[in-house]
Length: 227
Image 1 (cartoon, helix red, strand yellow):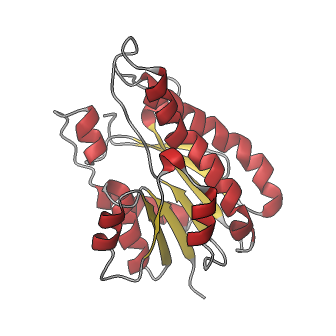
Image 2 (image 1 turned 90 degrees about the vertical axis):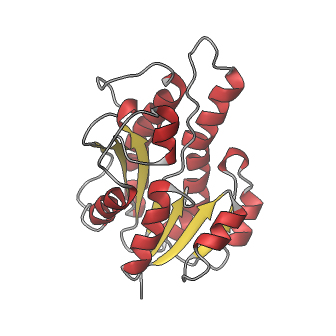
């Protein structure tokens, strides 16, 4: 039986390449994204199954309806993220809440709701995609307080959950990515030139996912530079 992976943030950047990479490797892929047209167009000629959901306002009922045929889940990759770059003096509470909603609270909800499907797999795992900027004692940049702090919360959340999920034989780790050539990077750092492509990072994440069973509760910085 083939293994199954569910990937969030699947309509662009690293998430998009992850979907294609896992499918190429023979996995059953479930792609979650908030842009219904992009989901349909990108994966129309593939076997990828799509889930239309907005992590900023995640409906549990909608998630359950669209994953009713997902019987077991070997791997959950929480790749989606929201970045609003703005000076802390101008960053509103609503904007902070939106980043935390996508970058931490929606992940909590997804893991809770998909827990039973992960538990049915043999040694299932979860990979949370964090940020090098969300790790203590790394470079920090103006305008990134909300994003970086939400990713820092994700790192500690990962560490805490490793203890709670151990009894279900589910491992969980956080990969704190440095600069990758994605729309989000261009949004945050328009002039940054970087040689790490989304496909290269997708391949790294795939290789980590199939060889990381002895690692649990860790945050690993995966970066050529930051940014």
